[in-house]
Amino acid sequence: MKQALVDDTEDVSLDFGNEEELALRKAKIRHPLATFFHLFFRVSAIITYVGCDWFSRSFVGCFVTVLLLLSFDFWSVKNVTGRLMVGLRWWNQIDEDGKSHWIFESRKVSASDVTATEAEARVFWLGLIICPMIWIVFFFSSLFSLKLKWLALVIAGVSLQAANLYGYVLCEMGGESDISKMTASFLSQMVFQTACPSDFQKPGLERLEIHKH
Image (tube, rainbow, N blue to C red; front, side):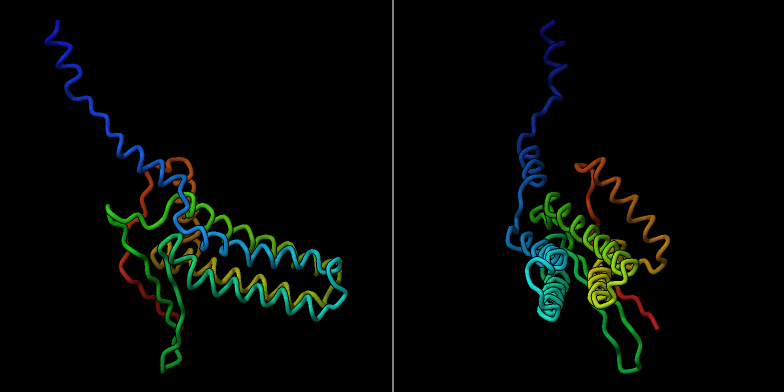
């Protein structure tokens, strides 16, 4: 009987280290400043746009303020927060022949260095997806209410934030150029990540390049 008990418990192992590492990855924000500014500029632009009539009667002042916030947001998300929070980076360049080149980079995940925590990744993607949707609502609201003087600003907001979203989705999908396949694959991947966060691991991608004319 004693021998049976020993055999039954022989293969039982308690790996507390992995559990602690998983808990830290889920909860810890490794880059609090980057996480803050990832949301600060885009949320500030939305709040300023909505409250322009309350804060100031100067259309030019509100227009310039919102446009500056949108520009700061575009630059910081494209060049800083994406690299720190999810280990992704993208940019577009024109060569001497006038061809457009989309270049994507993804930091490889190693066992000793976790690129991003799940909390940071969720904040990054939620902010990246929800805010452009809000600007799209503003676009139709301005259009149907005939507030045409705000239409140019709203179009700028949609364009700048949609550009970042498009670039990072392409980067996440490894440079997939087919937008329908890319969208379906991205949504299924995000659903899987939400349902099984502990089993999800982003593959390390080599530097990728897509040529568009």
